[in-house]
Image 1 (cartoon, rainbow, N blue to C red):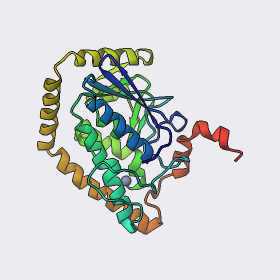
Image 2: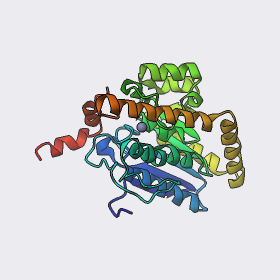
Image 3: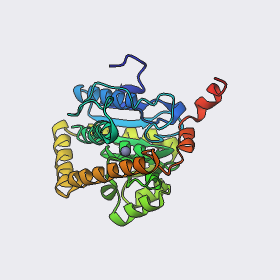
Length: 290
Ligand code: ZN
């Protein structure tokens, strides 16, 4: 377990846990550390009987720029106290390294959070890109400010979408294909029209509206909320969400392996430098001279 400063801020107010991703200088790019800090925060909210609803949000200009692929805090070689039933990846070779890491850190952690037995709301502003979508999608409700946008541009790398493959559940299949084939930004307004987002509000109102909704939910009985969430998640799984995700994860890893074999880079064809730059806008100015 690392003792370094948490990448997550946690605040408790009127039965609501505010879980805030706090790497604003990297647009909340998700590294291993943030994954486990997030898990810790969610667990704290689950364990606290006073907490009825959890709100996930991001500090700074954006909700999340996705998985950390280029900040100085990138830590894919680091071992953490794992939370799902997977073995350590750090000393593994070939495809096993990434397959095992992504099973734990992306696929199974996301499923673990999706099944948190209390209602969760993603409060999204600015960019919500690739791995950022995974974090929003594991939440039960999504409230977005009008400046928010969603994108999963990984097809450009030859990869069929991010690891937590909820695309055809978040969007109808034809729109999910458009979302992935083009990799373009989907505005909050369109995401609302497509049913991916519950509400779009002006940025100045985002926190207020989210809080109002969370407080209304918090008035409902705890067990009623838990059972309702379980019932709906169960129906999604009966409709094939879990099985579909298993298959997509295998294809996802075939593409990582293919990229590695053909180019020596599991993220082939992607402008990693450009992406990395977008994840360290603020820091660059300060650390350029080093
Ligand atoms: Zn991957």
